[in-house]
Image (tube, rainbow, N blue to C red):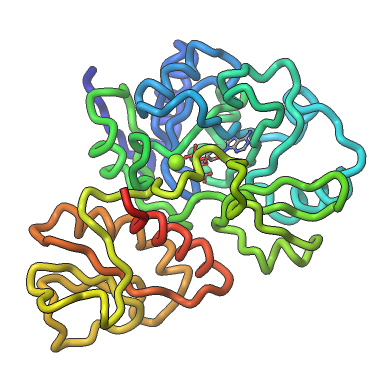
Amino acid sequence: MKTAMVDARSDFLGCVAAAVEILNRKEVVALPTETVYGLAGDALEPEAVAKIFEAKERPSFDPLIIHIENKRWLTKLTRPSERVRPVVNRLMNRFWPGPLTILFPKSDLVPDLVTAGLEQVAIRMPSHPVFVQVLRDFGKPLAAPSANRFGRVSPTCAEHVLDELKGRIALILDAGPTVVGLESTIVRVNEDKNKIEILRQGAVSEESLAEIAPTEETFGSSKIEAPGQTASHYAPDKIVHLFGPEAIGPSSHHDALICWGPIRHGQDFSVVRSLSETQDLRVAAQRLFGLLREVDRMDVRRIFIEPVPEVALGKAIMNRIRRAIAPR
Ligand code: TXA
Ligand code: MG
């Protein structure tokens, strides 16, 4: 299959129309969201959903997030759960549209393929203007995982999508680099405790969720709540290590360093990049996946990454870094 990449910044409506035409044929299309690029297909058509899994080589036990443009879809896609409604409403009012995914009990309308047979469906309302316009014109919800092959780093620009899925999908809408750079935060409101359980750290920080209701992290538990949350899930091809004086060993001339803060000269690495020279966590989040891809392609032996402070967005950044270094 030939993969076309078109610039949605120069022909917004033409690009949206092309995407909708593909979706109407139950095919898949790569679209920008504010977090990372997604691979979208009609969420209510198992045939389209199956093509998402196929293009990504994603195992069918790993469920997909459904994207909506309008809260009215919730009554169709989910079953009401009165006890959690006040907290869920506050979450939606505060963070939608935006990078927060919420789990709901699913209705029969949602194909089992989307939720991998689970009783809950993950839903988010994205804010990216291109994605929103495609949702509006298509008129139905879209299932969309990150537009990478399974187990690899999420794409934060259209060229990354091309690297990952060239020849497997017909169209990529390019709208430049994504603003957030990390995937959405995934939460569920616990019926008994009325706490916000965090299944995946992401662009919405735990601190800001805690302003709505008490939070609890469940992604560290032994029970796999989000099947995609297996330890190694953001793996570049090269071996990645956490940077620390003892980690490097005798020589680093063939290695790359991704540091936190200003680039310090006099270090023996063949390549040095910074997540953010001014130590801005938002910039680091935007740049992390792109830098990993960039140094992964270079002629270096190992990749070292310096840890960032684990506050606010820093927690999600360190979560992704740890998963890039997890032993494979
Ligand atoms: O920012 C994002 O969330 C991006 C953009 C494209 O929206 N999407 C994304 O999708 O990151 P994906 O499929 O790469 O990651 C979704 C995660 C997976 O780890 C999956 O296991 C989990 O969400 N998930 C989806 N549905 C679930 C469900 N019903 N229960 C538990 N976990 C679920
Ligand atoms: Mg993904």
